[in-house]
Length: 256
Length: 349
Image (cartoon, rainbow over all chains, first blue to last red; front, side, top):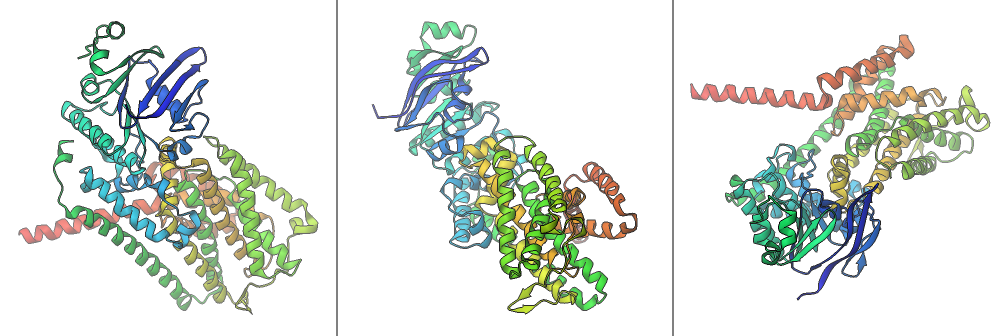
């Protein structure tokens, strides 16, 4: 087993009496694709929000490498190498597709407002370099022909791909993907599966929340099942599939 | 997504980068053409009144460009921008008139003071989501005018600050009663600040601003310190206003009173930005020209221009929410398309 990249321990979050996350612990290892599944309201997205500092946790810890993430602001967590995509692809709609991906380079850029305005200390070169890099990233994702298009008009499948390309431009160590297949048809979902595999093969560890069971069972190395904010089961896809507690929680839902 | 998986032609990458370079070059040509046109204006306009109005347009353009960075790009509203204009003007005026400072040193001092005030206002309010900055700047706008009126010993109060010396350039006085020289001086500043603005919005920090305007959460997830960037946008916006203030202080009146730095002006600036088109390069110019013209036309009716601003805002929101520059751009696009179709039709026949 490879070493642990993300170690979540005893995570708790209470929304005014509603315990959304109850003492959840799990680990994500380097180079793994791990899935969080569970019925609606199981606390999956809340866990993402706690890990990325969008919501403050009530208790527990989330350690990336050897850095405690809880308590840090979202942008600092991003700088430590945690990327994220959203269920409703949050693209910057007033920008072009290319500019969206260029924002992904923000963390690596050095230019400040002053140097950028005056185009000094390499700000102009940085701009050209990141434009090229973003263009190549779009090309690899098969989106080069959309570069000049406004992000606002894209169909949902392409929005998701652009969002993934943008997140990868930041070169994260860990990518949190919130329902990457939501709203996609079967072919598109398959494609997303291939993309997630290639992301992992590129050296990025993936933690995803997903409702599409065929996708989850196909790509995940390990699955954590949550129910009512609590850890219900954890293991390889075949173990989870046959777990009685999981079947009970999903009663009526087809896990295959 | 099926379409996405079709392999696009290889030269796409190159084409798009080329197109971006071309867009930027086109923008540079636009800027150069605009300022060349402005430079030729005094050859045709000899009337001192008109030159004076054109200087006012230049000052308003600087103010509107700064406010555009804040409103159009960072998505934050300032309801007291005239206060930053006033601080710039009064710091410059007091340092040169009362303390005999060099006008350029005073310009830098005014920049420092205005930026500091903007930072102090922005730091606590911009950490919060919502319209707290608008509220805070509204308050600052009122406070600054009151302070100017009350600190009579320093500012001359309501009676005004007089005998502000001329601006100097390379050791020579810019005779402010020769409006042509000052016209070129002001518009050189407009040109410089427009180029800096155009550079800034097409850069890492500029995109960070536009990104947080669209989605703070997504921007933060990509490592953008949104609170810090909003504060920086406010400080730069205030710095632009400060420079306009300094230029105003040394203009032909050589006199400062609190009136031009009140709420009225803040609203006029806001209307300039919205009317011209928030978040566009040429919006502030269109807005500054239009509103300055309206101000001059309505001068006999004094304060009633604010009624016109209100009407303009309402009509704009309904008819062209993107502002004049976007509406004109769309019109131009349609015309070109029609001409192209017409030509194609001719060829077919």
